[in-house]
Structures are given as C-alpha cells and as structure tokens.
Image (tube, rainbow, N blue to C red; front, side, top):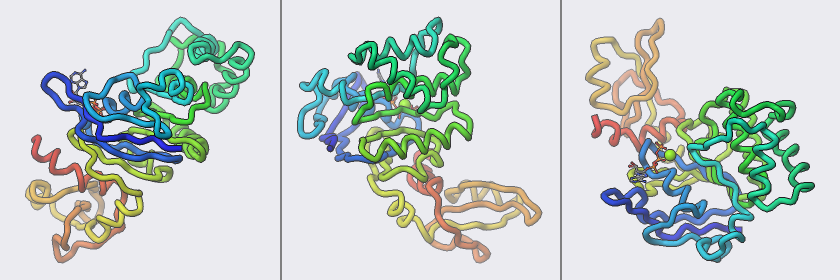
Amino acid sequence: MKLTIENISKQYKDKIAVKGFSAELTEGVYALLGPNGAGKTTLMRMVADILKPTAGRILFNDKDISVMGDQYRDVLGYLPQEFGLYKSFTATRFLMYFASLKGLDKKEAKIRVQEVLQLVNLQGEEKRKLSTFSGGMKRRIGIAQALLNDPKVLIVDEPTAGLDPKERVRFRNLLSEIAADRIVVLSTHIVSDIEYIAKEVLLMKEGELIQHNTLESLLERINGRVWNVVVTKEELPTIQREYKIGNIQRNEKGIEIRIIHDTKPFPNALQVPASLEDVYLYFFHEEVRDNV
Ligand SMILES: Nc1ncnc2c1ncn2[C@@H]1O[C@H](COP(=O)(O)OP(=O)(O)OP(=O)(O)O)[C@@H](O)[C@H]1O
Ligand SMILES: [Mg+2]
C-alpha cells in the first residue's frame, strides 16, 4: 500500500500555502511537524481530497485520488483540525449518523460504533449529549468518527489538542497499534506525541517540506550540537540573542540553559543527548528569530 504525494502546491489569491511538496508514504505513522501557518492543514485537506491542489497530484496505490471518488473515501479516515459537532446529538447518534454517511449498513454500524467508542475510551458515555462533553472527550469522539470505516489511510490534524496526559498516552498507543497495516499522517505541535511512534518525520516550513527523515537520523544530525551550560542572570539576555536556546531552568547552580550550537559555545558547556524538541528548535529557530 502506498500514498504518493507528487509535487503538490496550493496557491490562494496572494499566498502559496503549500509549495512543491512530494513524499511517498507506506504503512506506519508519519508526523507532520511545523510552526503555525506552515501549511500542514492545507496539505492534509488536499490528501483528504476535500481541497483541490493548484498543481501536482496525489496517488493511492498508483491511482489518482481525484478520480477515485468514493473508492478513496471508503479507505480514508479524516479528523479535521476544526471539527464541528452536532451538540444536541448523543455520542451514539452522532457516530451512527457518520457511519451512514460512510455507507455502513445499520447492523454493521451498531457493532462498529461500540468498537470505536471502546477504542477511544468513551464506552459508557454513549447516551450523553455532545454538548455536555469536555474538550478532550470531544476530540476523542472526533477520532472515533475518523476510525468508523476502518480506514487504510488515516489523516489526523492535531488530534491530541486538549487531551490530558493519560489520554495522550492512550491515543499514542492506539495510533501505533493501528498503523501496523495503515498509513497514518498526524500533525502536531507536541513533539512528545510523536517521539515514540513516528516512523518518519516530515518537517514543514513556509509551505515546503524541508526534512523528511526517520527520528533517529534527525537526532543523529544534531547529536553533538546540544549543550547544557550554567550562566548568570546578567549573561542570559546576550546569550538568548546570539544562540538557539531551549529550556531555561533556574536551580541551585544558577540558570541552567540548553543551547543548540555546532561547536562548544562556552568552556563550561556540557554536551547532552539531543531530543526531538532540539531538532524542532534547530530547524525553526531562525524563523522565530527573524519574525521578532
Ligand atoms: N482559505 C485560505 N485563504 C487564504 N489563505 C489561507 C487559507 N487557508 C490557509 N491560508 C494560509 O495558508 C497558510 C498555511 O495555513 P495552514 O492552515 O495550512 O497552516 P498550519 O500549518 O495548519 O498552521 P497551524 O499550525 O496554525 O494549524 C497560512 O499562511 C494561512 O494563512
Ligand atoms: Mg493547521
């Protein structure tokens, strides 16, 4: 199974939201990572075939998704970033409604609705109205909706926004399990969400794919460039201007900061192992600094 994204672009009136994006995806979790406005949602909407690209094409098993129509929708699950809920519906009614839109017959739908409720840990809540759901529960029912047709291609746009840490771990495990025989594309700002499960990471900046690599090789690229150093209050502002800074921690030693730099920045700096958060800072720090 494969999904081929071939030189996709999306141009709005005066804005190119996605620029010449290409990637070939097979079974496993792909993490789409990038700052606000990078083009993640625009790309995902094109992959979900609800937004037409201005250029390029997307193929599922070598067939153009724009001509596959319902055949593609049968294998697709999509959780949009902004997901409107029918607030007066109960959880069951909501899922039964979406199941019918996806073409499941009633008997089949009843069974599947119970299964997905269980998958997202909402069993027992099915008779409640969605208007009484917490933010995290709403997110979970959205995920349940995306899983109804047992999709081969699952696209989830910031699925963990609003989930508490326990649910986040559950969700991570769920994705990891279901990705064994599916293509899963997930966007998030929370790097720990993908640290354990992403097969490959796609870094997006200003509409372009700037890195497509395994987690290991991304970490490998910046290993040896992450440093811990203790500084004084007086030194901090200059260092913040001149270096890529990660965490700043005040403790009994003074102010301990994490610096990402190609060479040892200070004689007392200690090299520490790189994390995905460092990778993110390494690639996106310039953009943040230039925008200030
Ligand atoms: N309908 C539209 N018309 C014009 N510009 C748009 C439209 N939709 C998105 N954009 C622009 O395209 C760019 C990419 O937006 P997009 O929503 O894809 O980013 P994102 O990476 O999903 O951001 P976030 O992390 O905030 O969700 C942004 O500059 C945005 O303002
Ligand atoms: Mg978005």
